[in-house]
Length: 367
Image 1 (cartoon, rainbow, N blue to C red):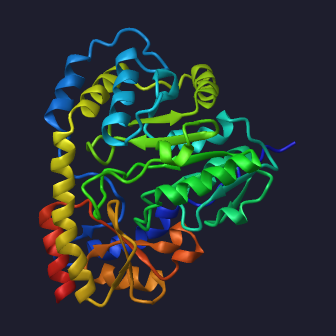
Image 2 (cartoon, helix red, strand yellow; image 1 turned 90 degrees about the vertical axis):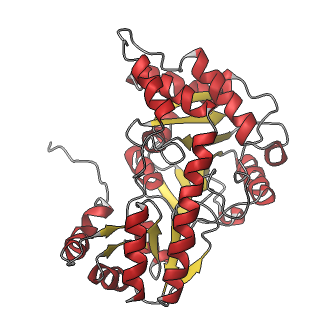
């Protein structure tokens, strides 16, 4: 019998390649505002910690070193307002956040016929994780529309691509519905430090006002890629229900999914130093303050975008038409349709570009 490969969708960024070539053909070159990959240096304090830990001759702990797990717990208390009862049994480091998102349905024992819920505008990897186990995906933002048979629910705040933020009251309603139907609910919170409406991070699903002191069935996923420019380190973690953490850890032990020991050391340094995060936040705030009005002056409406590293922009036209028009200016952005049909008239514009690139983009938008 012939082998059948996994039925996965085409990698969306491959479809963007012709527009990227078009943008590169601009006489002044391309300004890439598509993928949200950091362009600023990794903080020296983190690089130093990595260098000191390079004698890593033994296997690292899949659960994370005791020092790293303590650092994650301390960080949740200091930066996310999660102080009540979180312990090392409630946290687990991961090799970035994307691999955790893609493998979580497998780790939780989902299989063909199970239902995974995601937002109507969603990071594509939520659906990839479902596809890897043959589960079905339902896109719905209203908890009342979540099927009673649902096994896993993804929420995303601040949202990618929109930059929308879920309030503690909204998160509480979502948790209550998930528990009522017996589903695990997971909040992807990787952009929490970039809250443009407040100096405080956005609410976490693990906030006591959301979960009423009970972490059962609830997880939060986080990454240091954005706030600490550690995308190349693959440094993330998941926290929440200790029973779920134990299930995930068991699978990861068998699969050998363990962050390298030097990366674990670097994560401890990054989590303990809040100054570099504040500096990075200010860099993005300054870039946003220049790019947002330039887009508005060019005829765009900016929707949501109150947090995160993107501007959710529209002229009311088809997203691919807007992508092509901006490519003619040498500016590459992402069509909102990559994230679902509801984004078909928006584009996602990343703030993750150098100051010089942002200034070049604003100048081209004004031409």
